[in-house]
Image 1 (cartoon, rainbow, N blue to C red):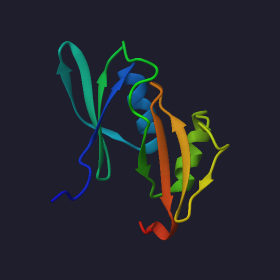
Image 2 (image 1 turned 60 degrees about the vertical axis):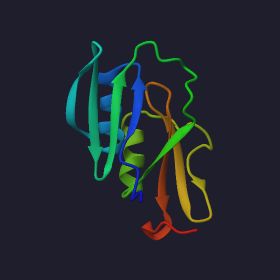
Image 3 (image 1 turned 135 degrees about the vertical axis):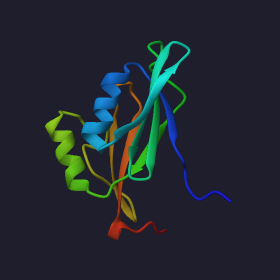
Image 4 (image 1 turned 180 degrees about the vertical axis):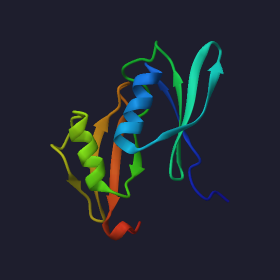
Length: 126
């Protein structure tokens, strides 16, 4: 019935700063934007992945989201982007090895934790 996750909707403290982060680090590009309830929003896309960001200046620092994961197609480009933009690893000191993948954890400007995943041989398997 469900093929894949369509999009992830995130409240962010600063829309422009968050849009730059997702563009610079993950290669997302704006495909749509607007305003709802007096606050701006954007839809960003990278490949089949979509993020909808809503500006919410009152976003609490400890929101209910634990983390979300983005599958990488080019881990080296991702790591170069982190280095170029001074984005630190959230924990693990960098790469975390799992049985079938490698992951890196970072935080966006609003504090959302993102797991960037590179599957072994670019194949999802368990």
